Length: 363
Image 1 (cartoon, one colour):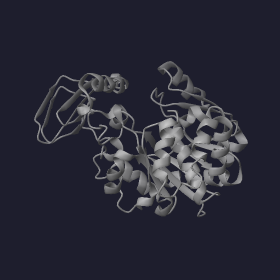
Image 2 (cartoon, rainbow, N blue to C red):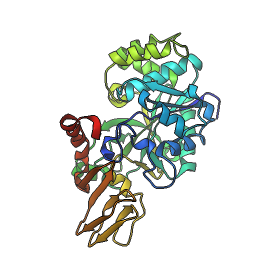
Image 3 (cartoon, helix red, strand yellow):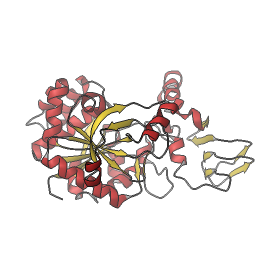
């Protein structure tokens, strides 16, 4: 691996679908949701060090979370914590990283990660990333890491790729045909059965020059905004510039801004033991369960005739549950959620309603 390879960890999300445990003051990436003694961010940072030296790992987060990052990653240099003044989705975040990194290393190749993913097969992950780095260094291309679906999941986006039997034997990197937003169950079943689709992980590899060229071609507005920072990045004027840049740039994902438009997008088909811990239901699959398939956190939880539930309670709270099946029951800071697992996609909208009706105190 060359010294031109970098890891960019995006850690600015609010994690609203993990309410009430995850709030705007301390979202899920800063929580030990797996009850293993480390947070999702800490796990991502440790995993990133298998890819490159920590001096080339950058965490981009909201300015409100600066201290949380410093507390959880004391070994990360303060210079490698880049702050966003506002949440504007992933495209501005990637643009900020690319244009700033270009100032330091025009030949840089970057792996972009979210801070809240689980990857169980870490050796395979390193191998996959190294293959993607090699291709990105040699070609003008944009690579996303895709996962072979194991079930018809309606919570993930999908990538359809152009099948190439010869290429599959070599690198498993395929030309992307199209991106599909989260499908309904019928479509998800078809995607899995067809064998032509992969889960879209939101993990990307590209050279700085390739992604900047893509911004210039497909989203000139963002290109102009962040190109204006040339000569300002890594100086005392950067904070002021980024405040202005983010105040005028649009809220848009990198998928919409670039990947769905570009014709040089590839996907690396992978099996990584990957999960996007985006919802309580997805977390449930990774937690230890009792004989009735209940995942229980809390020292004073009493359960009767209850199965297939995720229960997360404070240790000092006595909780008695009777006759529940397929529920999420979570309490945190005097906020209680009781929700059917198949209704969890509604939590994000409910949190918005709470903010409107009750203010920011509870979110």
